[in-house]
Image 1 (spheres, rainbow, N blue to C red):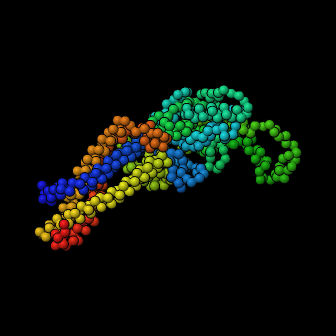
Image 2 (image 1 turned 120 degrees about the horizontal axis):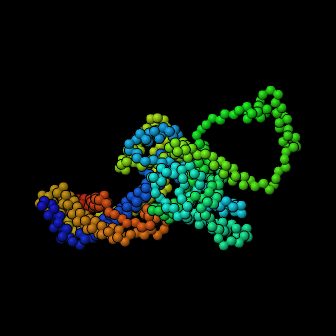
Image 3 (image 1 turned 60 degrees about the vertical axis):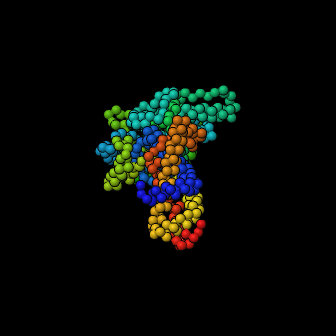
Length: 523
């Protein structure tokens, strides 16, 4: 055993009171670090796994916008910014198919809107319930994500027009329908909404004008895993063709339209050709004198509903069995993909972004954190707050340890002077105190590690319950079962070493400024 280490151990035992005070601080600090970091690491890993498995996949590919793009649209301050459509979609798919690091992929569109039963007695936004609309290619989406279970009805079929809502949305729709009828002085005990009933969707668009569509209710689902009780019941699954109509995206492939002469006859008569009497065309007699009387009872709301049925019912190319459903239409907001090796996700994303840049495609790839958007940000904010709190605790610990070491060093002034008088150099004295600090932090740090692991083991067996929605999101489920990681243990020991070494610098410098003769004379 080195001489300095033996001297350090003897000094620590001789001044056991100060040693225990400093060691207790070290042990408590390590317990906080090990338990806190394990909780944060477990929660973050749980959130990541839950989102990857249920909603985002490993990789999300989207267009670009001024604000950050997540699976829930463009994050901006106020208003609803339109989510960009994927540019050059066929080429993006070629790059995905050629990438051996991508095993599965699906497509999705996202929108927002309000739901209410298609009942002429129920109208207005106050009788509607807010929803997030996910339009996806059914088969490939379900092959990647298994985040819901059907409680009534069934899943949407490829190319089928319809809507799937959560059980909680269904209950809210029924309750609001009852209240709406009661306001109309219509007494009802219940208002059951069943699979097959028509639901009106009032879509929210970037131009502020509502877009109305009416679709049948195909299924009612319950969320599972992280989805349960944390707001994902807001999601309604809709066929992508109807959602494109709601968002006023193109309803299919771009096609030219050929018109025969009979269809352009009116245009020829009223165009800019010779012999056209524009004054007669827009005269009062033509416009108003012989026009049909306006029916004040005409139901414009019903017109919107009727038109919406006709437009949304147009053939969906995705229903053609000879075409890959994901390629039936080329209008999508996102491509969500699974990576062959989760550890190489960042490298795969970087490679895709290089390919997009090289080919001039205005698209971007991101990981689950980008796709999760505000949910991942919440977890990062909590972790940042925790780290700030640890820094504050560390500063306080340094101050307390420094004060304790100052007192300890001052009590040993004569000892230090004697050592200096016998030929010990300043460096020898400094190293002696370094050994003492390292011994204290290592021994009591291991005690703290043992205590922290014991607490984590107990919490894992019991489970930390999520008492509110915020904690359910943070814990990635109804309860958190923390697991200690090697990084949290090693990191805690390194941090207390650094704290101890910083705390000893000032006391030792004070002791070394005293002349050996004066130090020997002091008692």
